[in-house]
Image (cartoon, rainbow, N blue to C red; front, top):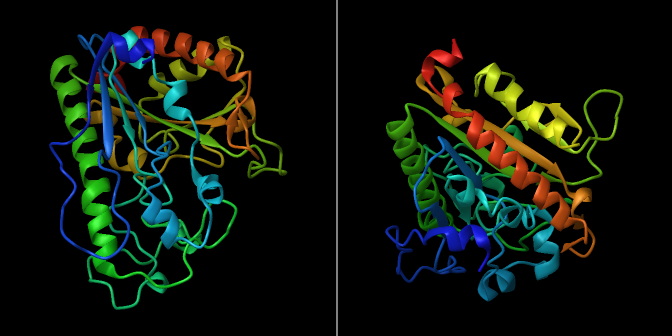
Length: 315
């Protein structure tokens, strides 16, 4: 067990036990989330890894028309490992154990493509969005390289079971961490941790992306001083950093970011070329060095965030 987890406590989210209903379709991982807490939370910061889940259950792989390796193309592989020492710096870390290809925790609960389903969807389901159009709704139609996941339609009953067994527990637990942190410190900074393919280009002149993109929904999800602090710390550690292009923040950033209420959210997108053999989906030797630099970042961010999380800091 890693140092960060030795230093704190792990919770498995089983207060939100997966349903046992005998519904057709692949079952969710038995433990949908893990929360790694410090022995005492000393920083007003929460780290989250919603896309690094790699529990591909055999029945899900069997239902897909892709093999297990192809299904992992959408995964933010090993991001939870890069931020695993967050508890050492006084901050909890929550991670989803279910794969993004199974349910995407960084979407609205019911953001679904009607073309994927055998019957009509309820009125409360969001059926039109840029994410759905790209095949990347709450239940994705494709993996990151555009390959179709399923060769047959799904039922809405299966979608609902998946979402209620995974997405709901994840966001209940995340909201609990935010509320607890805000109550203890007067505010909270949520750092939503992701990685991005190295072949993505920016929106201007197709320039290759740098090392890290910070997303704060163009200044609406975090106080300017909070984003500036994170950017400065990352640059001082040798990372090249840009903001909001092409990743300004997903559902988590938009939904929870309320700086005037003392809740700040920053999305971090890390270039996979820094630490990952993208073809093999395996860590590079350089991963240990990247993790060490991110340890320094977390330590300094946790130390510097306290005075910035209060609602008046967003004014």
